[in-house]
Length: 369
Image 1 (spheres, one colour):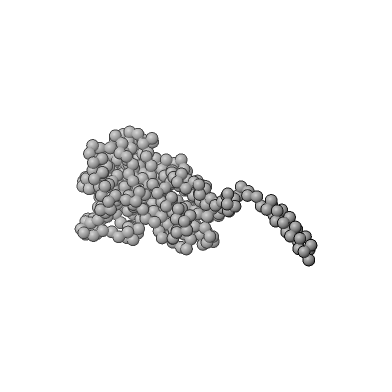
Image 2 (tube, rainbow, N blue to C red):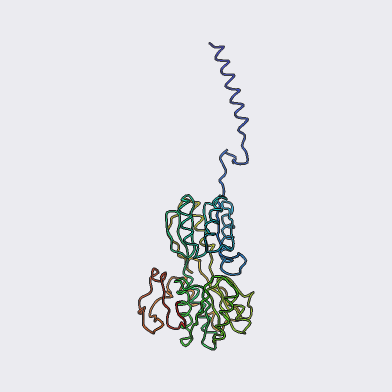
């Protein structure tokens, strides 16, 4: 019996040594033999080019900030120039096939496609910019760019000599309409005689169309051009006519150094880092995100030497109040185009109503088509 036990013990020791030798740590393990954490793959679906010097450029700067802040745990991929069609679905599905567990879609028109793909892939988180969707694994994000538009309106109102300011606008949706209203309220806070003339393009990014719209406004007497568009076309038109301009999304001074004064800006990275960190931490919820100047999502680009004298001081005064959360762009009294008081003094427009806004304030010349 002792002899049999000795034989069995010898066999066991040999097997243990063999197994031990075959389980040496490999590149997929750390010093304690635990698997290294795989990077979270995040996809970004862009309506334009990351080099457009405008809207998509601003989003891509946010993506790059995400990589700088969380690059040790996150990997990102992008797809540019994606149309607001069913092709968007294919792009997102391809990203999932490449291992993406989070997808950001940066254009309003992607909304319905995001919902369809999200519902087909419940293990992936989808975040859509500027829409209103919300489900178990998908939600939306945007912010109060109206704060920066109001500030840029102050600059435009102080600069104009003709008291006519042109505004090149993409689509007649609440996002664009409330931006026009905020800009006009800023203009008239310093220049009650000025008007804002609106020209619709029905496109987000088409440099030629945007420039043509700006030219039409300049022909109508405008000497300052503002925009809710993705390219620098309106800025170029203003410079070619010897007039002035307010950009959008990014510093556009390179396109029109003699015209450009400032621009409302998005710091998308402030949100992208926060959202992805919560996903990594397991604390993400589908609560919609609405950022402000106070929390760093919104800002106004530095004023250039083209800006009017005294504009910096006027802007700084209101900007500080916005950062403190004590200035409300849509606080009454506010009149509509007909001159009727629609927001009495002492009240404001709730965010829910802002998100469905389909009327213009007094001082806007144009129709909601």
